[in-house]
Length: 254
Image 1 (cartoon, one colour):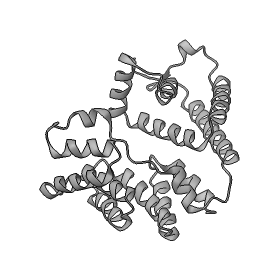
Image 2 (cartoon, one colour):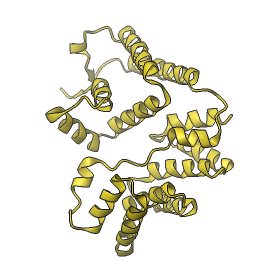
Image 3 (cartoon, one colour):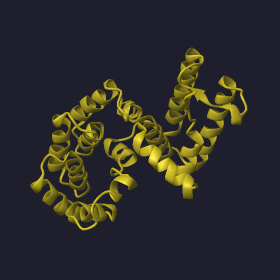
């Protein structure tokens, strides 16, 4: 019988850098191919950034208590089956947890934050997956660009990414990283153009990321009307970044 693994414990340990050896290798491979796990990890990272360490521990305790109420089975039996089970109960539990998260986050983060403060709170450069980096030929320009990008030398990374795009402008992964590199060195117009190119291409794996960074870029440059529209689109499209987009709009008073 096919089962769905409860990744919550592994996500917590991964973010706490408590996974190693075979467990870490398994989790990273699972992360590369599992979009639901990617979304859950992204949400947890955003919550961790929004909350202090004590608040994170308190949040985990509250969510564990809720989980015990909706699923009183022992931990060893707590496996969600994908082909059977009470879906109404699972959905109700999910709603309870989401409302609890929203309430706790709203009580911890001070309202009335500026666009600049929200950008600083939510922005982080895109992290290139370890397995993706390892597939690049160590001698080619793209690999060298990824090394500079990983070292946070965005000016050098940008020059190398542009060389890759000169040879193959269809590389939407490189276009996204070019946009982020420009964003890091405050070339906001060029960053916007790169993100829009990824979005308008409309046939690649990086559209949601480009939409998110475009919205953040508008936030950074004070273009709040454009930011509102872009965050609203993220919410409407049920993007991986939907929860964060909703929270930002709430903080902006919309």
